[in-house]
Length: 438
Ligand SMILES: *Cc1c(COP(=O)(O)O)cnc(C)c1O
Image (cartoon, rainbow, N blue to C red; front, side):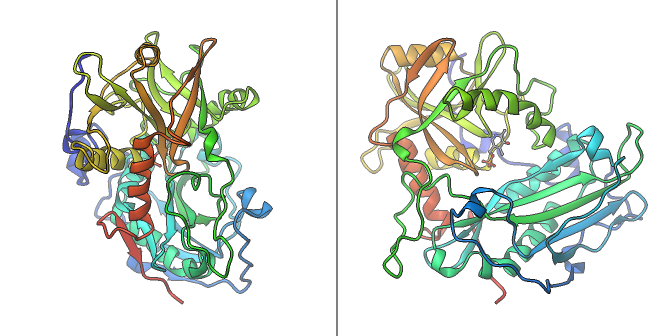
């Protein structure tokens, strides 16, 4: 397919937010809010503070590495078909009970989001493009017949939780670190019949996560009290090593649900992920079809920079959204936007790149590699941030991806720009400041 240079505006990354917009996009909610059902309303939130506050673990301590520790509070909101949304609650973090017949336990009626709360080098807390996550959350919910809501209300609930727990759990001394935010919705309906759920629970938790991203171009954290604030858990020099998926294991297909962040996408990927790990690779590179279209890497979007054979121009290429077999990453959209805005002309000593969303195959990657036209590859997503890729294994062959030092130069530059926005070194509309309660 001929490459088509596109602008971020046409990249499919803008999301219609009105109900009619969603219908136009082919997404119909099982339960659009009606007049009798109460809408989700963050201003009705009830607050119950914990009586048993817990200790904040040290960064990258065994407790953090185990990825089980959440902050003191969580937000919940119950929905029923009769009444709509109950008043949301901010309350102590802890277990909740659901019936063994609950829809989510049988029919995977679950969707989620993943974003981060960042402690900036200016001492302030920030979210990154939280509205985009909330819009995607709404679309994911629609795909699995979970109830509709105004995404702006979920954003307010996320902000309320971050404001409550941020000061303690992401202290000012930890500039350059983050908490992981997991908004989730499950169908708690206790009817075992296969049907649209009549009851659901939306909840938001804040988790302590190890930093898997610090390795490359993030701004060097300043030393406070004579010690370095953060440590990297993985030597950057290695880069990610990807194992291309086999024909018998497909992550997503046209008409499926690969473009929704629903739990049903992830359980079935764990066998392939485990096999990749046991063979010494970090992530699966998900291919699609006999043509071996390159789609995504693990739970990250995948980018390559190649020199086009005909035009000799550099191109930053990633898979398109319209087939709905990849997840529409917020990081992906941001990479495309920044590359279009700042790299379509020579900048910081870097040759310009054309930004291209198109189908491409492993054969294209191999040809570029063998002809010396493969400049770099990287994965982009909230969890791994911008992760340079150093090798791809495909059907018995290891392709070694060039790096300059520990990263490709484009990955390093884009990562540095994004990190500056997240950690407050660049004032940008994507960085949403959270006023913390102290
Ligand atoms: C979450 C996710 C991504 C990355 O999305 P971001 O919004 O950038 O974090 C990419 N692919 C899959 C399959 C995902 O689940």
